[in-house]
Image 1 (tube, rainbow, N blue to C red):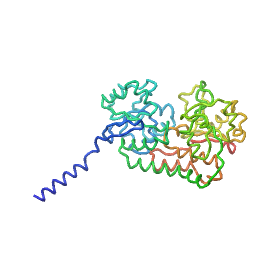
Image 2 (image 1 turned 45 degrees about the vertical axis):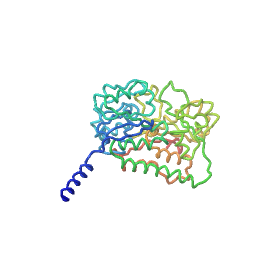
Image 3 (image 1 turned 90 degrees about the horizontal axis):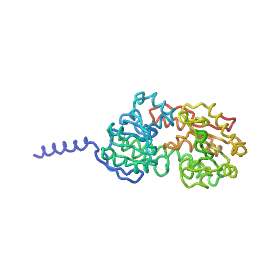
Image 4 (image 1 turned 90 degrees about the vertical axis):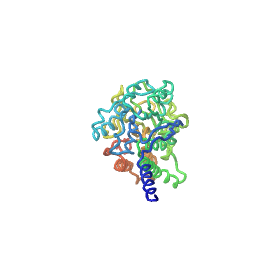
Length: 378
């Protein structure tokens, strides 16, 4: 009997170990408690640009669980889409969906794919609640989980990464990614702390200029997102002096009065959406020559012509999509080199991003994420 008991106990233990994780409660960034079986077998990405995080967690197997995604990657970040398409040609047939706040998201088409979970960005919460999407999805067996890498990344990026780690069954990789990211940010923040009191240059960072003829100067960032990256890199974001929200606008007169030491514009390949094509096309495999040409053109606007930053060539461009993925360690390192070149002479952001790709991502690294008019436009 003792021997039989041992055998039964061993079988029971094996069953427990072999059993799937099963139902779990996840608290999303909106503070909602959601019951879902993890890891999820079928995931619908309500924003395709979440692939930048999911790929860092799942590597070669990132598309094993994804059954559909929003159409934003191919529209707003086609260079990254091309990189993933080259490596995973099957994603060309992956079903695409519209944006929930715009009313372009088809819940019926989503239900037909039978996903376990739909991940949405936090800014879609109000529209999702008002339209009843959350309740309708739940009735169809689809859990809705809100993530945030954009509105308040300092508060929500790590939590959102951890949530994706649970959904994809990659909790260990999520922890490793979060730890590596912290170390790369600390390369800058620790050195600044040791340097003591330093002069913080005034910085104006403009959001997506040249994408639309209807957009007035000058969209910018408050104390979060790129605004916080500027501060972490040892600069002073002038937008935070006026704007308390994540995004906002300054008028041209405010830019002239502030007379920033550095001007940074965010850019990407917006060819599919732009009506004027004056944006700075930085990003994966971007053309340095075209980026510099566009950057110079944007500085011909009246508000910028007489700024000290423009006269001295302290004008730069950064890949806009850094604002929606927890890759901010790259621009923080690059900003630090621009703001304090002597203190960070040995830091190589391009090398850092290349190492990140080699360590975490299933696609090869290609340069092109920054441009600068300093040093003759190099």
